Every structure is written in structure tokens, then in C-alpha cells.
Image (cartoon, rainbow, N blue to C red; front, side, top):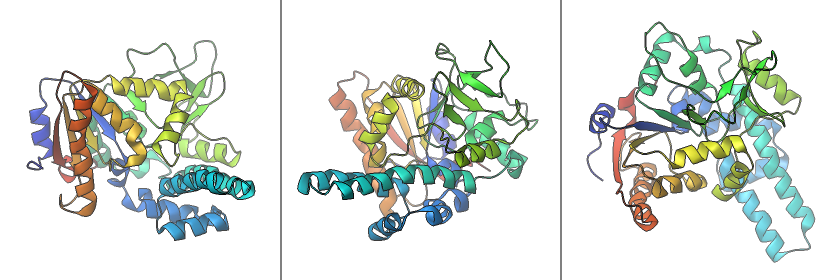
Length: 342
């Protein structure tokens, strides 16, 4: 691995072309690790888990919901292959995997900061300064932090061009805004895996808002979850299952089409490049991005960071195999130097 850059150095190197951001869970953890780390979410959710699901977490020695969902679904496949008569067990495993999706949404909503005012203006200002460097912003997170930061008016006179494709319905007054299928060109904020405040209402995709209701977003989301209405979000355990869900949603599919077509430089912040998001990583390899800057949190020689670096460097092989004419340059920057939340 080449020298670890600072965020400022990475920005300097990428001058002259478009920049894009891909945000992972580290974006939220940089604000409050005690709320958004896997351990914190598991602590919020464990009382809602079935006894068998709890034993699955214990057996796998993890608090990562997606890792357990992936293992459960793989076990379903094995049971069907090795013991096809054990359909009761297969159904139980599949049911636990599906329930974990719902419990995860509830855990995120339960542990989420209640109001934007819980975040200091200085923290928002730092976050907005970070986001202002990018032409397109793609996030794999479900929480409201990115949305709050983009909407925040902290008097910094900093304009961030942000359009997530949602607008007030033209034909009626509504408590929500709707996603415009035809608003392709101007959308530049994309929720690749959905978001807690975005719901599929059948004939339209709705985004809950505070300004139309006067009710805090987190309260609206918690009320919806209590009524067994769940947002659009992708939390399957493996990349293939995630991609299947994405392909059945026009909202999510458009986000991925956009991500596959970006050029210029891509800054990946707070993502572990884990295999359960290979569907997104492969788009980088097959795309036309010229440079990828990957954030590294902590020492580059740690086991986790070594794995991140190895996967990022494999982008080069993937680009070569894709037979794209433009080569790909992969570099790494110090996550802390970005000072995303100050």
C-alpha cells in the first residue's frame, strides 16, 4: 500500500474532475459510535429476538445482524440440500432471518437521536463542509444523519447542491413528499439501500418530512414501525439477496444505475468493503471511475484494515477483467483527517 494520504491531500489530488462519495456505517459511527456500532444495535434489539435467533448470535460469536442473516439463509439452503424432509426447520430458519430485518429497523429507530437539535451546530457545520466536496452522494446507511446534515441551516453560507428526487405532489396537499420517477437528471443524493424515512406506498414512494406535519421524523418512523409498516431498506445477509431486493424496486434500481455510471473520483468513507456489499463494489470495477480513495480508520496494519486494503486493491484486477479502457487508480486516506463531524 502506498502512503496514507490526509483527506486534504486526497482532495488536492482529485481537483479538476467530479468527486463522488460512498458512505458506509462509519459515517454514522463517526458521530456516535455508542449508538451506531453493531454492539449498540444488538443491545437495543436483543429483547425482541426469538430464543433461537439469540442462540444464532451466540453460536456465531457476533453482534452483526447481516452476518447472522447471511448464515441463517445459507443454512436454509444446506438443510434443503441435505435434509429435504426437514422443511419445518428450514421455515423456522427463514422466518428468523426475515424477523431480524424488522428487528434491525426497530433497533436503529429506537437508538437514533430523537431530534436534529441533538446534534450540535458545530458538528453539522463540519459534516456539511465534508459533504460540500462531492457532486453526488451515495449512502448505504438507513439512518437520518445524512438527511439532517443536508437539510441543516447553520448560517455557514455554504450551499450544498442536494436533490434526492422527492417533491411535493402536484395534484394534492400531503403530509409527505413523493419520489419523481422522471426526475432523473437532477437527483444527486441516493440511498442505495433505502432509508428509515422512505416508504413504498404501492402506487408511489413516499418520504416522511417534518415540515409538512410538524411531527419529528423519528416519531413518525417509530409510529409506522409500531403499526407494522416498514420502510424501504435492504438488510439481507448476503450480496445476492440484497441485489434481488434492489432489482424489485425502481427507487433502489435507479440509485444503482446512477452509481454504476459515475466518472471522476470516488471517495469511500466508513465502509469495510465486506463481501455482503459485493454488488456495489463490482459496480466500481465495471464502471468508469478514474480514482478511488478509500478511508482507513486507525492503523493500516490492523487485521480489519489489511482486509479493507486487500479488497480495495483487487478493484484493479476487477477493472482489468471488465475490459474498460480507462484504468483505475486506488489510494487510501486517513478517515480521522476528514473530521466528518468535527
